[in-house]
Amino acid sequence: MSVATPSQPPIPAEALEQHPNRWIAVRDGQVVAVADEYDELMANEGVEATDTIYHVPPSSTLFY
Image (cartoon, rainbow, N blue to C red; front, top):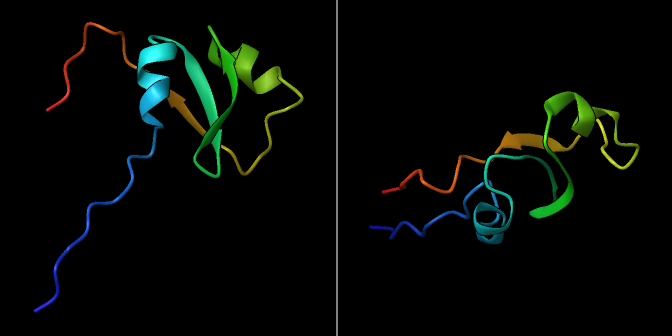
């Protein structure tokens, strides 16, 4: 029997605290760009087509 190991969350934990209710681009587990609006983030020259884009929930949102 194999033991499952927890996977890393797709959004770095510090992003949840540092960027509530903002858009982030993540590359290799690191936040590479942050913006208030999706269009603003996508216009950032530092964002690459292979980056994963997330909207960080407001800080009042609870995760279980």
